[in-house]
Length: 318
Image (cartoon, rainbow, N blue to C red):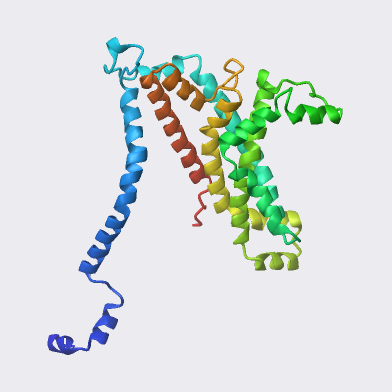
C-alpha cells in the first residue's frame, strides 16, 4: 500500500492495523488524571504517617529530653540507638515481644483456621453462628481489655468463680500479680478478640476455592487429610499470608491490651516494646530515646513483613 493509499484508507482499517495501540497524548492524559485522583489520598497519608516518621527519625539523632533543657535539641549521633542495647530494658522487652508474638499468632492462626473450616460447611443457622463468632472482633480493644481485666479479678471476676465452682486448680489465683499468669491472661484476652479476624480472612479464602477440585479429589480416592494438605492449604496460602502479616505486625506492636491489663507489670515482667516506647515518651519525656525505639519498631516491622512475603513467594518452575 502506498502512502497515498494509506492516507485514503478508511478509519476502521487504520485502527485495525494499529491493533489496539493508544495515542501517546491519551496515555499522558490518563496518567495525569490518575495522579490527580490519587494526590489527595497521598497527601493525607503523608501527613498522617510520613511526618511523624521523619519527626521521630530526627528526634532519634538528637537529645530531645524535656527534663534536660540544657542539652535540648543538640545533635546526639547514634547515642540514642546505642542506648537500646546498653539499656537493661530494651532487650528483655524485645524478647518478651517476640515470645508473645510467636505464641499469640500460632494460637490464633490454628484456632481461626479451625473456625473458618467449620463455618465453611453448610449447616442450619450458619449465618447466625458466623455473626456470633465475629462479635468479639467488633468490640473495641480498650473495652475488651477492661472486660477481661475485670473477669480475671480474684474478687469480682467470674474466672475464679467458675474454676472454684467446677473444683478446678487455680481457683484462688491472683492472675495479674505474677508473671506467667499475667501473660496467660493477656494471651486469652488478645486471642478472644483477634481470633475472629483470622477466621474472617481465612473463611474468605476458603469461599473462593472451587468445589469442583474437591469432587475430583474424592473421585480419585484422596483422604480428608490429603485433600486438606494438598488442595486446601496451597490454595489458601494468599489469604493466610495476608492474615499472618496483619496479625504478626499487630501482635508485635501490641500496646493497649498490655497497658490496660497490667501496665507492663508486675515489675517489668510484661513490658513489651510499645509499652517501653510509651514510657520513654510520656513518662520520661525523652523524645530522643523514644524516637529511636519507634524507628527500631518500624524497621523490625518491615523486616517481618519482608520475611513473610519471601517465605510465601510462589516457587517459579524452570
